[in-house]
Image (cartoon, rainbow, N blue to C red; front, side, top):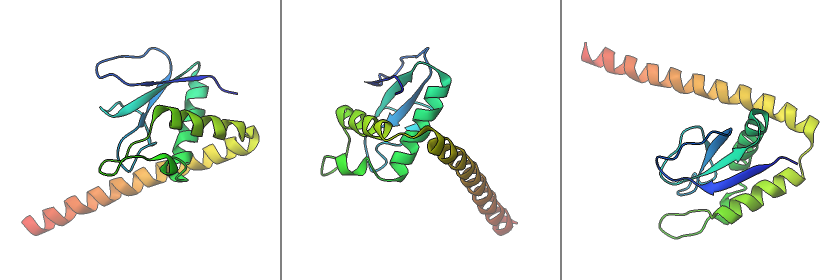
Length: 134
């Protein structure tokens, strides 16, 4: 079992331990982030390997819509810190190391591919604008 600590992020605070952030407001609640935003939790771990593993675990939980069940609020949905902790701990209990390592490798490849496609779409949009302005 991995050791992690989850807290509410305070703007301006810096962290020395390996960490990442989880969005806690809006329809993207549960999305892991590398950089902080005003509405997020911070997850600190004991090592970089644990950080990477937990980051991709949270990403897979977000993609699988496991956090969506715990959203509260009618205007701006949000997720509580105890609910995030519960979802992560449940996922860690069902954690199988070999299968998870394969899934993480595939998820990293898919994420890189997705970023590449987004860059291509941005370039195509710029090309359209340049074509229409000339």
